[in-house]
Image 1 (cartoon, rainbow, N blue to C red):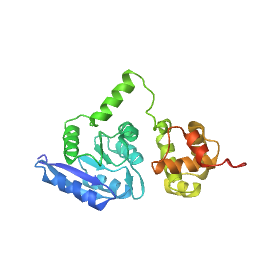
Image 2: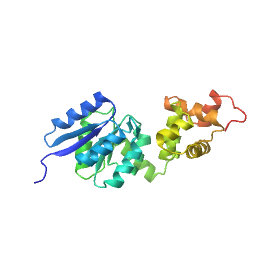
Image 3: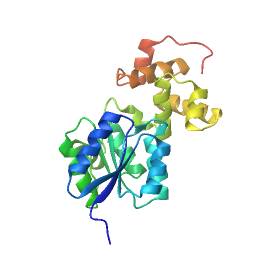
Image 4: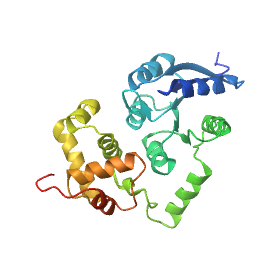
Length: 237
């Protein structure tokens, strides 16, 4: 006999927000929260054991990156539906999440009704993004407009963006390598690619701009912002 309710797993490392999502889901007549997780490892285990119909996922978990988790889960469980609910700017992350395999994207600041609408939309076999994101995607498709000002980091790959964020959070190369389970040389290669794509001169420029970006202070042009906040250091790469 088929299940009467759709089983949903909630993965978010903020207990209060996670509790709110669970209550929202359980109030719906045909939905049921089958479990809660707060890390990549526990989410992977829960998907395997609980076999949810849909995963509501934050991009920031305790021990890893949500985008990489989406790719891993979709490779293992192609039929798993995934809705991302994140504080990250949808203009930069929604398209990346959908490319990774998610079926919808909602920002945490949006109304509760939007989360319900997103769940219903995805369960009906459609993709869900906000109206603003739909309009932006349409403009990019039809007019082939360049990336919005302030979102020059769209030039970076998912992994490069992840490394860029970690640099901005003050993490050293060795720490980034350990957390991402990459070699030191691989992280260094990502750093070089980021500098090249963003037109930054050296490690000091990279650190200053990444820090400003993480804290929401970066300007439209990375070279101009870095030049305004740091003096070039000879011999630094």
